[in-house]
Image (cartoon, rainbow, N blue to C red; front, side):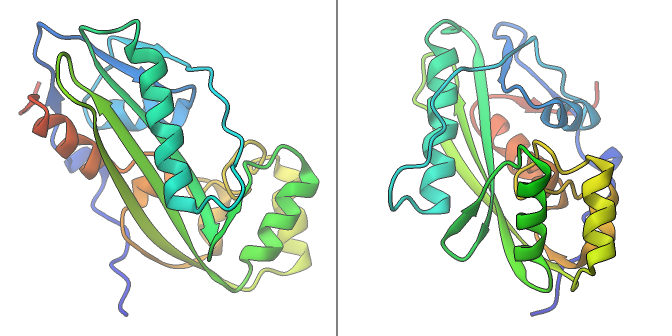
Length: 213
């Protein structure tokens, strides 16, 4: 399989403008998702960090987990924002059926990098959008990524940078970890945290219109 490579720069993507009668709410605590939306020309009316239980259920597969969490985030915010377009997302890094954690310590970053070293993995982002007075719509984007074999020195230096803390799979592709990537097949922005093509398509399909601001 020939990798598709990195998509065109975000600046070339279409800007999106909302129906002025309905505000757009981003249900996310992720600064990366907000930054990606802004780079695509979309500014949420408000950003709300939903509080939900993100614990993995026994036997839950990566795609099902990401979709369940994204839907729960949207549901939590949409209850109070009934007249808005409410969008949430959840990103997971998976090796086979195993979901890697959002690393909360240097030890977890190290475990993740050792597992990813010299292997392929998949980054899945589930999107859940609740338009005003319409049913929720969902979509899941998948990007396949291959890491080179990482040396102890490279892993140690990355851990010392602190960049992997709080990141799914223990790495941030938009930072130093981009040097670890041998190839990528699919959406680059998905690996950062929000697949822009799928996000804008989902919004437009629910009644938004595209065009330059």
